Length: 533
Image (cartoon, rainbow, N blue to C red; front, side, top):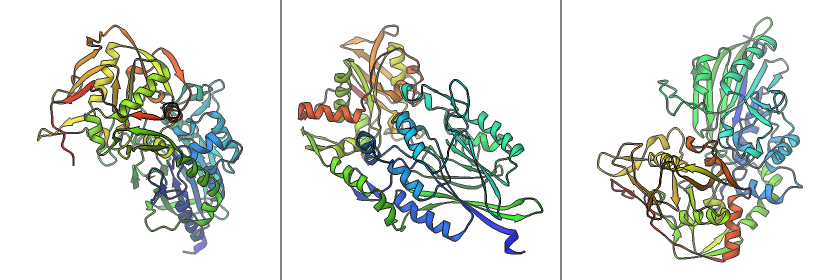
């Protein structure tokens, strides 16, 4: 068989990069195997090895680090550093992810306009015309003396459950599965590609081997259904869940998901044989290339170094002091016993809005809390999302339902110790979906069945009444029902604060200078023992 009639095409995928260019962890500035500066080395090497290479970013690119936060706040006249890197690496397309909207449409539209590649999403539509909002919903690429490839972009339609409504007021999110089915059929009939790729900013709702549900079938993640019920897809690029997945065949579809924060690159290799009028797929295989031992591409560092330098100076600015101990030594202990960091965040939320009840979460297990001197680095390391605040009016019954949802975070192990319910760890860590409240007194009894664990719920010593109304402040993600807190969805909004929480926390320190680490034990977790590992 001659080389001319037999070629190999490589698809490279990044997803959920979340603003990471430099190979560091911003909370500590320690070196880490992540970021686009290392990804660039892989992309360049793969491109040199074959003329048939397609490079796709699968979404959640422009938000997630102090670098991108600082750029949005202070670098309005500059080019977006994330887009500069993708332009330099000659990406073929980008897919809109849910976090692309976090900074508002002005920032997103600027990023799209600066890109030398198309942004594709077939199910994000103009609310009025129902036409694709970001232009063509798919990319067609015909390689010289090679195959004709179609790449369809799809985005989780769950975004209205999380996003600030003002950021998406002109958009309509069509069901991802239905839109994918419609467009795959259209592309197969009209474009007749040799290879059809779906790049879906969404993940799997079922176990890839057994097909058993791994999460509530809300429609947030539909990748298994897409592979099972839509004919004509050759490759599915996925993301959103921050998992590492490489499957050569799931109902005939080759699947890859490359982890997150630029910790890996998804790679799909397809071998083709030339027929009379088309290229026939002979073999498909997938892998996730890890960044261990990968050199940093110096040109990417040079390209964006000025942004990083300004960010680092900003991060090291002292903005306040802590009197007492507000450090975190064991994140699980924070969730079973009241901690001064959580009380402080709730206090800031209540002061900013005037609400008397507040909830918040410890967002991840890497939060270190605050030492005696607090810098901007400390703030963005502990409060990692660009959330704003929403005050909603809920009933006492809603409040209890929300607390029961939080209480489902725990499981009682056979030895009587308290652990984490696996549904909050797999397939994606969701520690941010366990809330802790101030302004009310409550007890969680983990020895009781899920849904019956709130054995005490009072305010000022009086029982919370199921039909009474209460104003509660929370972040905009939670207020929209995010994290399966459906009892909050579409509730009356009495106040919104459009300043990011990081900025509100910084303003609080600048106003008060010194913050006392205080604990008012208004809640407890009983029914089991927690032992530190």
